[in-house]
Image (cartoon, rainbow, N blue to C red; front, side):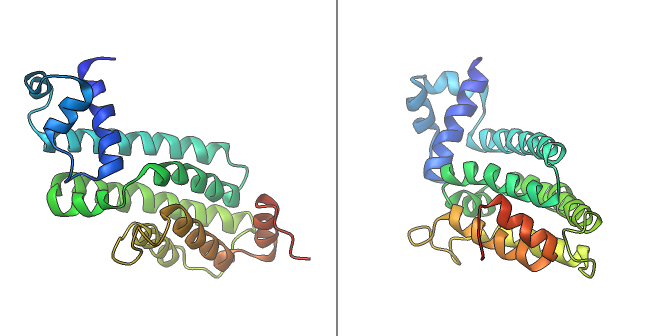
Length: 203
């Protein structure tokens, strides 16, 4: 692993743990056991590191999502697998990252928004159409409306003003929102499949 990748990996861990604003270039250099001179030879400033990490994270997320879609047997399994994937991220995520990115790193936030409204929205709508075709989702849902609602649900889960991190677990917030979403759009067949996947017995 070269210096650049080591810096990105270490900075990512610090950002996930403490947020973007609270981590300095000094902190990153210290954690790496590296001189600041060497650090600045690779990246000109923290903004450069944040934007590079954001690009890599979003690219990796797209690849993982595409793989997840192809491996899922149906639309419901696709969303439940996605929940597992996001739970891994949420377990490591400091909720202030999104807030810090919006306030202090607008270029990185713009990349995140483009990913959200281009890639993520398209995938949510694709899943809705898939579920309708598989008779797992109701045929009367308006996919363009419901898709955007679901997209904002994901954003809401990360808002510390709505869900203070000292009171709510991001992982549990996301789980509850996803299950409410799924139960709102599924047919009886889809509802039974959710219960089967989650080992829920309603008898």
